[in-house]
Image 1: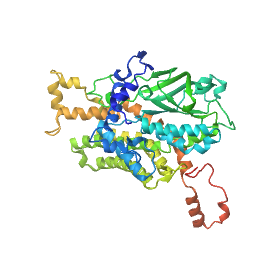
Image 2: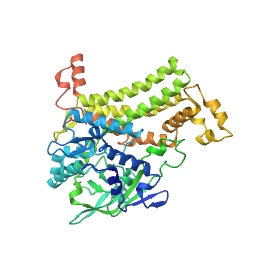
Image 3: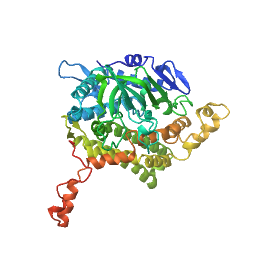
Image 4: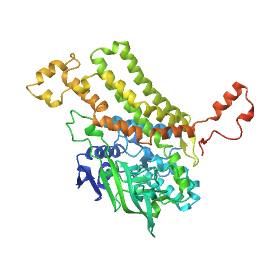
Length: 495
């Protein structure tokens, strides 16, 4: 059943051991640095029940008519992807900002496992059954599902076995009940989520067939032995009127320590199987990249809106140079939009019979969205002007001693009075210039792996044969030059 917001909040009051700012958190939902995002996630759950959003956020299953969240639905048609895109847009518009780690963008990683059942069957058919069961549990149980990827890593010039072995998460022993794991993972939103798909980040296993580090599982985030050590959040550091985004949308990142945590066998998705681990790393974002890139599209909308409002306030939107910079933002935005749209229109069947976005177009769109984000933020800064970084805070606009002067110098015309001007500048500062803005820029760059991996995904998914054949025919080369091999490193969509 689709949960309510209250049921979600109750579910994370499970006694988990959470630390932030040097103190233990006694109640996660009410802590000032978690509360804004907990409330947003609760609101998303409630949107599935509200009459005005129910049809957008949910669907009825064919057998029995029970309703489930659109974000958790296995994609099998193009309409499924349009529905997911529309639901995400509605969430972002309803909450009034960008949230990245709220579940719909990470559940797709489990669908990638669903596609890899044949690989997993090579080691143990039980793992394939576990995957199918977890896919069904996500649909039926509607948990807040996040992703556990990055380890502390330690000295990356050494094998994990040649240093403190806990630098990478690994299995330390087996029991009748399951495997016991030790190590740590960075997981955004883990402190207030229900479960995490946990998997290795090692890219090169060499010729090793088995490894204690090649382990993947779904972890109940209320499990004994977990410790959550969180990055201090931005919420509450300054007045919400001065930093409206940081106080509402900061998604707190967490180092999750696994201190001999038992993972029941039914939650183990692969174990000591490097081929499975390699497959997962290569296909992890086959589906989840779509929702991730869609967030960049809406972030571009916010930058365009902030920049255009600033330009129109003083009539600068009439100048050709300003129009050209606004067009740069529009081209960036529409480039992302085109990749997402085409990825649906040219969607491909997956090995397990799902429908995945066109891989080459989706991964190319991710490169575009992430690699140009810093440049587009700088363009937006230019258009917003220097007052973004020099404007006084709300308290000065309210102080009787300074209010008349600030009203005088910040009122532009009868449509743009000082208070609206202040709000816009505070919004633009938090979007583009603040600590929160810098954090989001770095997060978007690395959230789905580093930039070189983004390009590697394009290399693996692009159809190199078409350009080679065209160039061969145009140059009059013989068929021998193509040979029997594909370009090294490439793979078909099915692979």
